[in-house]
Amino acid sequence: MDNNFTPQQPQYQQPIQQSGGYGAPPPSYYPAPVPAAQPMGQVPSSGQPAPSSGGPVYEKIDRKILMQCRHKAERRWYRRLAVLNILIIVGVIAFFIYAFDDTREYAENVYNSVVASVEEWENPDSADSEQSSQKTEELDKIEEQTEDIPQSLYYMLEILITIVAIPFVVYFAYAQYRSMSVRITEKTYPEIYAIVEEYSQKLGLKRVPKIYMVQGNGVLNAFSTFIPFKQYIEIYADLLEVAYREHHDMDTIRFIIAHEMGHIYYKHATMHYYYAIMFSQLIPILGSTASRAREYSCDRLAQLLSGSDGVDAMMSLTAGIHLYKQVDHQDYIEHAKTVKGFFVFCYNLVCDHPITTKRVLALVDPEKKSGKLY
Image 1 (tube, rainbow, N blue to C red):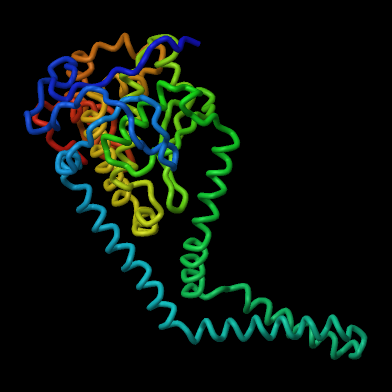
Image 2 (cartoon, rainbow, N blue to C red):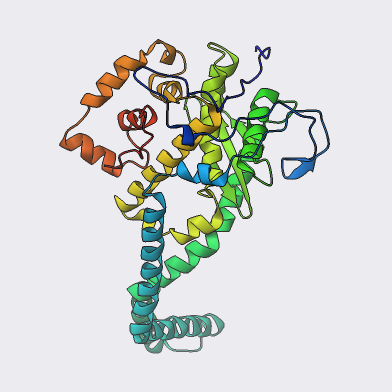
């Protein structure tokens, strides 16, 4: 494995790399020029400030510029889902209160069933056969009544169990990723770690998020996720091959990592964000539309951080890590403009990521408009 290259540092004062007909964005899109590397002071590292190591220090990008990268509809859709989520919970609670008599009757049946079962277990021979048969019929009747849980109680239990279970689920997933992954550090894949540390400084994050490499068995993916009070990144091993093996393409990796850092910066991968839209995001079309807006936001932020247009990154996820360099960008862009129609619209509508053609067209838009959600 070839480690004899270092990540390129983007130059914000220069136009983003062109791909096909892609032009330079407006000057206001870029922050002030990044200063030359200076001796490192106290820089956050994997949850704790790192001691001075002589590495580069990067200037924090102005928050206004970072917010300009956000899709114009993202926060609007988040508010809609948050309000809808509250209405769902309030509706279930109101339904539970309205149908409380059914719940109380059900609880009494459960109690009677338990008491009768205990009495029968304690005194199995205390009654004659006729009394025993009558008692058995009564127990069967009570058990039938307890089998049908009132819908109001069912929905209430579903909400409570989900809210309580989420922390355990995410901690379990975190345990799986930690135990089945290779953690990327200053010593293991230091070029990748340097990118994460660079972006953390530019975004003004208090801590450098941990990043893990996991074997995906051919799956090309990367994602950011969370446990309470902490966010981290998973990147599949096959994606890292574009940097370390066939193409030595660090720009593509920089864009992909920058995209995931965007989710972390915008707090998409946090417990409170998930709780706020936990139930409403499951509604078809609504949840996927909000998700597409988040993806567009992170794509735009990734362009800013990486200095790349991101088309190669999209092609690596579409054509694969071995053939993506053979895709002619201009030819693909011309093809993307022709991908239209009712069924394309319907397919994009239910996808939680924009379809690749729309995503690429948004990336190469010289005016940096928000990508099309529909």
